[in-house]
Image 1 (cartoon, rainbow, N blue to C red):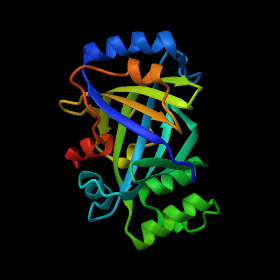
Image 2 (cartoon, rainbow, N blue to C red):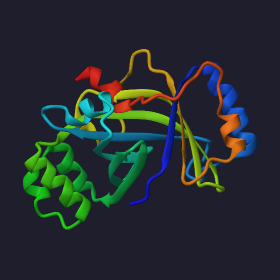
Image 3 (tube, rainbow, N blue to C red):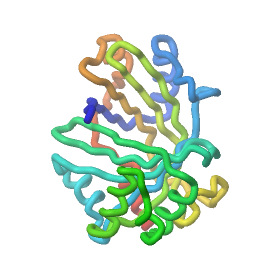
Length: 223
């Protein structure tokens, strides 16, 4: 399992403009962002006791969460991801799902998932069965990604965060979503063994500190 360092900062619109200019001067645009950005839609899972939410709020040292994700309006490539965090370091396992597998997971259809052959989907099925994991909320946002090969650095600017009212709408890119109230812009910085000084310097924003912000937690205020 490969672990990475991660910083998160909450910034404002003026910071977004300044960072966009500074990052563009030093870093490369991710090739997946044809016009500089793309849309991300994620479906998060939790149990009846809101284990993933509680562990995030309480800053539990060792925790995990499952989500299903696709980009833009392209449901031909859907990813199941398990994000783990240990001692402040993050790791992500992922695999591709078929549309029918993703729909079954979004509906909590355990009978269909019981026949899954994919190991990560099997793990989700087991935890849906044993721990009671179920789809909880949809999180939509716009992402502007930048990359810097030394240190395998990835910097993202996430904004226009919205949530949907029904998990059953996950595979409908045109489903109704609502903006999350008072939502800031999120700057995320991820790297492997080292963070180059040039990147460390350009992401600094006056008056802004590292935070443990969670888009999932923010969207859970709606249910």
